[in-house]
Amino acid sequence: MSEELKKLEIAYRKLLLAGLLLLLVGFGLIIFKPLGWTASLILGAVIFAVSFIPLELARRTARRMAVIAFRGE
Image 1 (tube, one colour):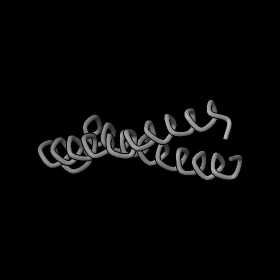
Image 2: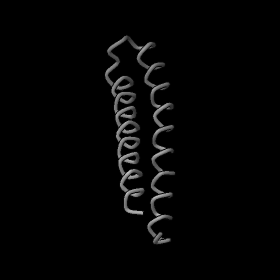
Image 3: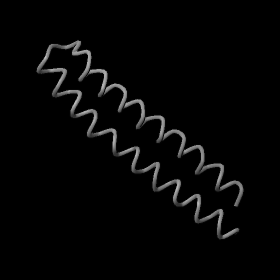
């Protein structure tokens, strides 16, 4: 059980980090507009929307970790 939880914890951290970094990049593009107004706004919105995929996977991984921990297997 402990080995499986450690693997899930590593996966959780990677997914959460990826999602948060994508959110940061998306917001940075929208706020600072380094590529011009239109391009930065569109690319920032797309990256912002895509960032929810790893965040959702991290949430599901955390839920699976909690179920395994509470079961005590």
